Image (cartoon, rainbow, N blue to C red; front, side, top):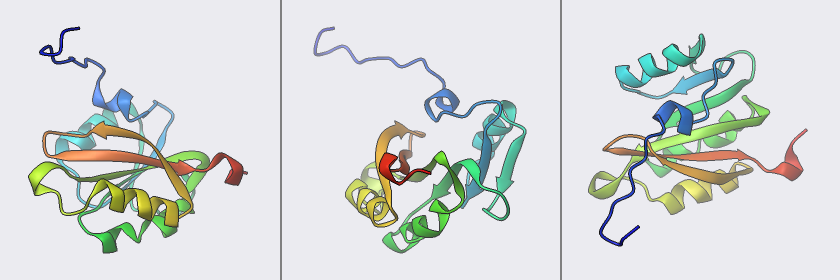
Length: 135
């Protein structure tokens, strides 16, 4: 590939995020209707908030360092091999830095292991429970 050639990714966002037909998903924060429809097109188990049983994936929006403080509480609502996707603004519109998200993840007992371009305006960082801390 030449330096001037941009790599084109064809894998759908829903696949990059690891959402399977049997995934149990919770949404915390405000998400666009098209994302909600995409989720519901993949799995029947999508809930608002984190009440009740643990889920496989939590998608949480964060626009401030204070909002990242929710990660500690959210960690208790994912299964051992689950993940929390922290969705935040990117580029010049960003209100938090990736280092803020990583630091908050570590503080919550999580470790980041993947970043995905969520949309033209948002990025998503996946945080999981460390292997040594899993049940």
